[in-house]
Each structure stands twice: as structure tokens, then as C-alpha cells.
Amino acid sequence: MVYLDNNATTPADPEVVDAMLPWLREKFGNPSAACAPGREARKAVETAREQAAALIGASPEEIIFTSCGTESDNTILQSALRLDPDRQEIVTTPVEHSAILKPAEALARRGAVIRHLSVSADGLADPSELERTLSDDTALVTVMWANNETGVIQDIPRLAEIAASKGCLMHTDAVQAAGKVPINVSAAPIHALSLSGHKLYCPKGIGALYIRKNTRFHPLLLGGSQEGGRRAGTEPVALVVAFGKACELARLRLEAEAERLRALRDRFEAAAVAMGAAVNGGGAPRLPGTSNISFEGADSEAVLILLDKAGVCCSAGSACTSGSLHPSHVIVGMGLGTARARSALRFSFGRFNTEADVDAALAALKAALERVRETAAARPGPGAFAGGPPLRAE
Ligand code: PLP
Image 1 (cartoon, helix red, strand yellow):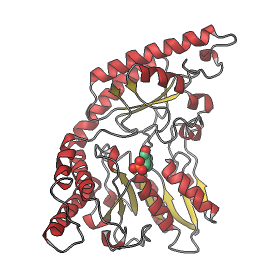
Image 2 (tube, rainbow, N blue to C red):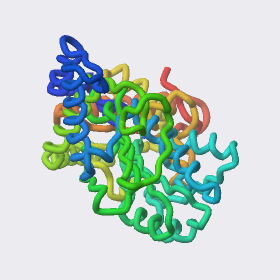
Image 3 (cartoon, rainbow, N blue to C red):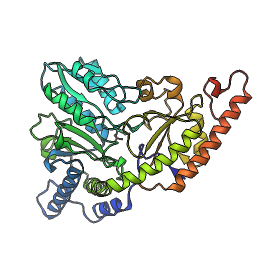
Image 4 (cartoon, rainbow, N blue to C red):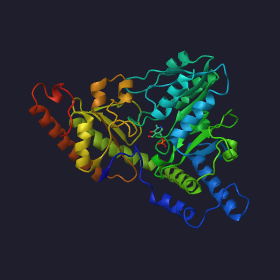
């Protein structure tokens, strides 16, 4: 199999698995317990906290462990609206992950006001629009660092400066950006940032939330006093250790890996463009390993099925929304239209991909597109590539 869906999830790195194994076998202490196994577990958890903090330029005490990126996102949204009854607005973008958009919708049903900034055709939010949108009612600005579908990178430090100048909290969902591009939360007034382990070559079930020192905060989970009283529940030590190791590896390899992935992505994209692809978000700064392309008229689900049959794994839209038959809200949010959205394919390259994977994917893509074209040509009426109805693989 050629796995090019690393933005959906990454395979665990063997070094990460090795780090966690002792905590699944012989080591079992509760980090809140005072006895020797507990103290050993506490030490491991605190080491992981240091490793996670180092990845984003934070201090260890600014990191709390959560179960996933979704929990981190939900936690900060609900917290922000509980701080000041006069600030009940959240400003965000239409291209956020559903882990932001859905809880925001739920909060709106309970009276909050959600304002969506527009994004350009390349997927970028406009700082001056943020400036105009913020008011004394705004509690939180939440804009993702990098988009999961297109890889488009927002200017988070600039947006954070604007939010801070109006007294608003700034949160960024950095689930896709962390470990792929440099992040330094101390260089800008970023109050909160979400991370997820399974995008970082760590097993699923662990995430983290950065909360800047002295930022007021309401926990989502109440109970024990774990995580400095900010997230109750006994820490899953094995996963926490794995997450710490994953953050450390990502930090140490970031620069070289970004260069390697960019080369793989560019090799892929140049050939795809020669086959007729339009690159979604191509004019914006992007994550090094993400390519979102549309062959307009070629229904992405049809191409995806053929690629899957050929052993190439990629996705249409995000893993969380694929299969829903809705065109990608990200491509639609960029104003590129439903035809472009319905034909969008995401190829996301990762740590274990090689040039041979790129070439195999390109060969499979070429064959899949030919098949879809043939099917279209055999149909009565205009073919798919002449603007006909979306095609399904047969
Ligand atoms: N935010 C972004 C940008 C994501 O890509 C994802 C997962 O795809 C999430 C949040 C949710 O993270 P998790 O799967 O850890 O809940």
C-alpha cells in the first residue's frame, strides 16, 4: 500500500512505540500516587510535558494533556465563553476543522455569537478584516495554524497581535502544523493552542492544550486535581510518554523533514499539474507535505475508489467529513465553487514516504483519471471533463 493520507492520521513511529511499551507492561504507577511507582510515573509525565512544551516554545507548566485535538478545541471554546458574561462572541473562519465549527455551532444555540471571517481564494484570512470584526463583545479568536485539507498556513502571530490589541483571547488549532513548521508561542500573544498525538506519529488517544501562563481558564472535565486542576482524570501514562517522545522526534527532525517532504510534494504536484490539476491553496504558504488538487469534473469519490483499488490511500476533503457526500467546506469556503470542491483530492506525505511512493501514486492517478474520462465519454450527454455531472466509479 502507498499511504498518502498522513493528515488523516500517521503510523506510529517505532521509536515512539518503544518509549511507551514499558508503561504498558511492567510500569503501571498512578502519577498522582505518592509511592515509588507513582513517583516514577509522575517523572515520566513531567518529562513528556517538557518535550511537548519544547516543540512549540512553551513552558512545561503551560501544557495540559487531553485525549485528542478535538477535546483541546472544545475545552478552549467553552472556557472562553465562561470568563466574562459581556464577552459572548467567538471569531473564527469558515475553513476550520469540525472540532471547532461544531462546538461553535452548539455554543451559538446557547446564545453565543459566532462570526466567520472570510478567506481568500487561497484560503487566507485577512488581518484587516479581523481588526474590523473584533469588538468589546469578542471573547475568543480561533483560527487554525494550518488547514488539514489544503495545508494553507495562516499568519497566526499577526492575527494574535490584533486579537491581543482588542483584549481578546487568541487560540489556534495547530493539530496539523505542529512538527511540520516551526511554532513559537512565546513570540506572539497566543493564549491557547491545540495539539494531537496521532498527527505526530504517536498512537491515537492523546492530545494537548497549551494555555499561556496567567490566562484565565475553566476546565472542561471536573474531578481530581490532575494537570494542575485544569483537566481532571488520571493521565494515560503510556500515551503521555509516547506523545512526549513524538514531540521530541518531530522537533529534532523538523527542518530536514520539511525539506524532504517539500521535495516529495513538489515532485508529485508538478506531475499532477501536467495532467491538468488545479492546486487548491497553491498561492499561499503551505505545509510542506500537503497537496490538495482538483481535476475539475472528475468526481473525487470516483477517483478515490479507483486509487484505493490500486493500493493508493489518499482522501477527498478531511477524513472526518469524507463519505458525507458534502463537497469540502474548505474549498467552498475559499470561494472556489462546488465543482472544484467535488473534485478535490488530498495527498498528504509523511515521514515514511519515499520518491517511489510518489511515482506509484502518480501512475495510479493517471490510470484512474483515464478510466473516469473513458466512463464519462461513454455516457450520453456532455462528459465529466466537459462539465457534465460528477461521475462515480463503477
Ligand atoms: N483539528 C485539525 C486541524 C485536525 O486536522 C484534526 C484531525 O483531523 C483535529 C482538529 C481533531 O484532532 P483529533 O483527531 O485528535 O481529535
